[in-house]
Image 1 (cartoon, rainbow, N blue to C red):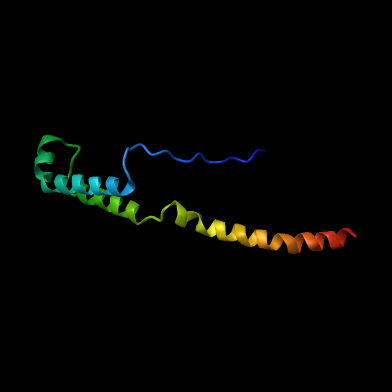
Image 2 (image 1 turned 90 degrees about the vertical axis):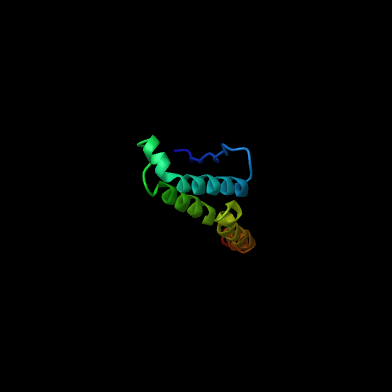
Length: 96
């Protein structure tokens, strides 16, 4: 059975993450300001939706970036490389 590797997600926006979060924050603040008007015009909007969406934006903003997520595996990889000589030496000793 072959090893499955997840594809790296591609961004669907043409800006930096900071600009994306700033834009989303601005949009949801404005939506909250005019929430009553939105509710009158469209039944898909309801009280509190802006707060829910802002919480989602803040949660995404608080997530670690790619480098922080990969830091632990990188440290473990480096430790494994350091142990390679020791393990190879023991293997060669066992072979003889």
